[in-house]
Length: 262
Image (cartoon, rainbow, N blue to C red; front, side):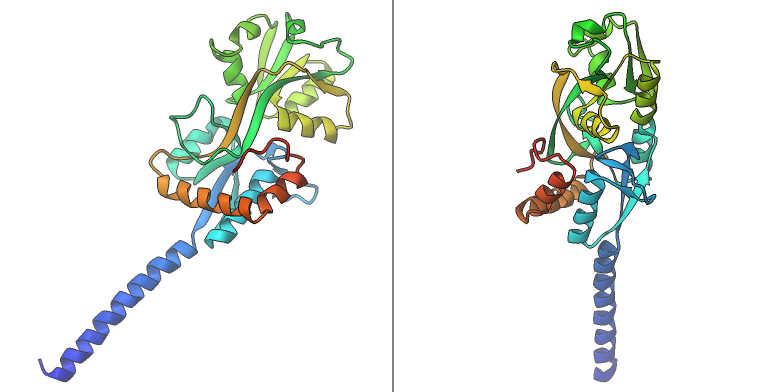
């Protein structure tokens, strides 16, 4: 091969390498980040009056995508099917007021970002003021929720749940509140942030019992082994905390007193 051909071959090879590296970089930048969330879980994820999905978690996810150059896909899921969605690859993570405690070994977890409690909500006219008043009462709870977990756990509040007249599961808390309003259930066990939002949005008429069922933290759940994606999201979250955007969104959704991201 003469020198001219050797040079031409070399330039072509370098060009192919450059294209290959450019393609890899572009693929990462064009990533679609699919977030699985409960669409009836305000203030973390819900549909607003314009028919758009929004909420604290979804706005945070959007800011994470801006930092990483990703496109956000908001994927509403049936909460009871969240693990199937994650393990099948339909979603990249579960980001929806998702409790870490009791699930530590089931997912790759982000840093915790919200301190949460499971609480009991009743009508303010129900004459129920403490947990022992729930004896013989019908209590509603979301299926596959942290509230259900704590009421089913021998080391949690199962002894309390055993005193209930019934523990009824619902697909979402909007339905549970409709049943509470109708008198079909006497109380609802749920996350305190969601409870506060529901009570405020309904104009009052309900109270949160002073005695909480537990204390816990929220995180973002990734498929086991997917530490690379988790680490990228963690890095972006910390940047959002440092630049003030995280606190701005927490204030917007009245969650400032509950956040724990450092």
